[in-house]
Length: 318
Image (cartoon, rainbow, N blue to C red):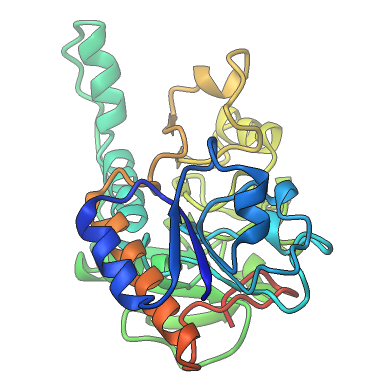
């Protein structure tokens, strides 16, 4: 009998779905804060987010199913046994994060952030001309599920979409042109909007440098809903302060929570949200996570291919 440890806040209907997929297994339900070391070490399957330092390369653990798309802490050598399969929740967050990034984009190009500031100060100001996604060029840097969902939204508004990804392939329908990440600098002078949805890898850390913003249009909008360390806070601050770009919307920062004394808070042309585009803020996200968990448990028990198996060398799904 396999031991399945579930570290998610599931309701009865979720338990029934998971347990139906793992018929014959022994289920233990807990939370990341309350789970015991013994429960972790006895588990053959863990579903949810467990403190990576508590796994200790457990010999018993055969499958770790994360409820996140990010895998940073779990691909560090020595965290998981070499026989442990790691799967993530890629695909569960595409709607929530893409819609959040799209909302930031629309807010900024229509100057709604400025009008909100004026409202708080009881100012009846005309902020002048705005821009439109129609006939604009939007670069989506990171063309996974979230990037493609965002691309489809802006394309539906009439944008010309440049997708940026690591490997060459035929562009999906939501993308007009595909460029490799190695040629990212060529994209900056062309894009009216740059939306970054990159994961945290050695190749993506601080990928946006001072010269990146120097190459962008002074009317460009920069959106980051991927990882905060794609751009250093001081680099972003200088680009916005010196008006190298028009404005930015970020859901992630280099240091989280963003320190209260960070100068980023005071920039009029920056909108900050506290890394909330994902999570379970959109209820449909958690339903998709449970679906992935149930599918992978059944597939694992019956020797079928799993969804979202992670490549330990890249941190991406295979």
